[in-house]
Structures are given as C-alpha cells and as structure tokens.
Length: 124
Length: 228
Image (cartoon, rainbow over all chains, first blue to last red; front, side, top):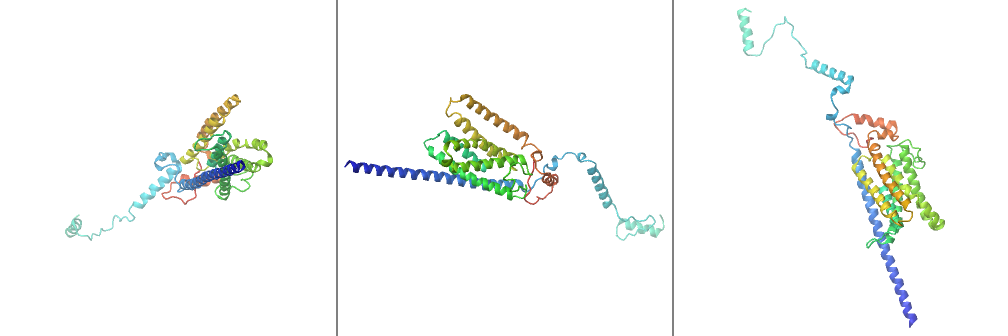
C-alpha cells in the first residue's frame, strides 16, 4: 500500500516538474521572440531614419547665414563686376540713329502733326 | 542595434551574476534570456559586418573586418569595433564549450565581456555616420545609463562590503569614464572636423566638400552622407 502511494507521489512530482519546465520554456521563448521582434522592428525604423538623414543632401550653411558678399574674396568681386557689365551691355539700345538721319514718323499723334507742320511751313 | 542588444546581454549577464529576481522576473529567465540574446546579438553583429563590407561608401574590405586597425577608413575607431566583435565571438565559442573547458576557465574568459562593451560603444560613436542625429544620442544614453546602473547598482553592491575598496574604485572609475565619454563626444565626434581627425580618407572628404559648399535649389541624388 505504501509502495503504491509513493509511486503516485513520484509520478505526481515528475509531472509537476515537467509542467513547470514547460511553463518556463514558454516564458523564455515568449521573451526571446519579443526581444527579436523588437530588435528587427527597431532596426527597420533606424535604417529608415538613417536613410532619411543622409538624403536629400542639404547645404552645410543656409544662404542667409553666409555673411556679407565682401567675405567671399576678389574672385567673387570680379564675377559680380562682370555680371553687372554684361547686364548693362545687354540692356543698352543696340541701334542708335545717326544725327543727320531724317526721322521717319509714321505713327499719328501730336509729334507727327508737329513734324508735318514744320515741313509745310519750311521753318525750323 | 548590435550595441543595444549587446547592452541587453551585459545587463542580463550582470542580473544573472548578482541573482536578481522578482515576482514577475524569475532568476532562470535572466540566465536563459542572456544566452538567447547573446546568439541574437551575434546574428546582428554578422549582419552589421556584412553590410559594412558590402557598402561601397567607405571601401571597407573583408580583411579590414578581420584584422583590426588596418583599414583606410577611420582605422582606430573601426579597429576597436573589430576587436570588440572578435571578443564577442570568443565569448560565444567559449560559452558553447563551457562544459569542456571547465567553469573556472570559462569564468576567467568571460570577464572580457566587460571590456567588449565599451569598445563597441567607442566604435559606434567614433565611426558612426549617424552620430549627429538625435536618435543615435538617445540610444547611446540608454545604453550607457543601463550598463552604468547595472554595474554600479547591482554588480558592485552585490557582495558588499567584501573588497570594498576595489568596489568603490570601480564605481568611481565608472563615473569618471562616463564624464570622460561625454566630454570626448562634445569635443570629438560631435565637433566640426571629426571626419578628418578620425582618419576618413581625403578623397571621401573632398568628394563631399563641393557638395556641401554648393547650395543647389534641387536635392542631389540619394546616397550622399554628411561627413562632419
């Protein structure tokens, strides 16, 4: 009778140890899976952040913080002077009428009427 | 990410050594999670090395990933990473052979884990191209804070007052190391001109410089990195 009781106890003990081991294994697996998921997810997020940080490329200093143009040196001064000269040349009239060339007025108006009156009267 | 996992492994290792446990955190969990996360950290470390070698930007050769301090790209800081990686691999191998080599030898070798983590941290800060970003700073603060707290709050307190002078020296040294790290970061990796000082090849800096001087109205193609 005693032997049967102790066999039941041993079986029960073994079964409870087995259940506890399985429970512990499950706990470890769950935590490991959580950590692995977190690690892979965070890696993806950080890779995205890193990629967005390197592109698009931004200039090191904003233009408004570059300081006065005089700081840029003689090369910039020369380039600026040339640009001004080019602009002035491009905006100047290309054809200048000769001083002795008769002025042709075709458009009607007060100036044309005055020219016509001068021509008829022969005066200056 | 490798540094974050390595930090978790170190903290769990300290928790295992000091037999930390709570209502929801049994002691066996620290030990087994320490082992599993070590393997995960090893996987991430291999991925990190593979992507660094395959990335054409820094021209890191496979040889540079194996032999420390021989790289043309930031040799000292890359070399620290190589040393840390090799120590991690040595720890993993001796961990697997623990029963064969004996507990005493394994424990003696396992002390190098404490050297491995700071080397990895310095490598990340010295070499990392994202060191100027806020998320990188947050991760560094988390890692340093976690290891410092576990080391001083758990490891050095555990077994007190045995070898009190040694423990106090270690705590003081850890505090000084953290302050030194912050000062170095402010005057080194976070200061202008770090790329040149860290040993970035001149052609990489030159290829980056004209792009930084120009202020194009449209963004340049993807793939550029800012070298500070």
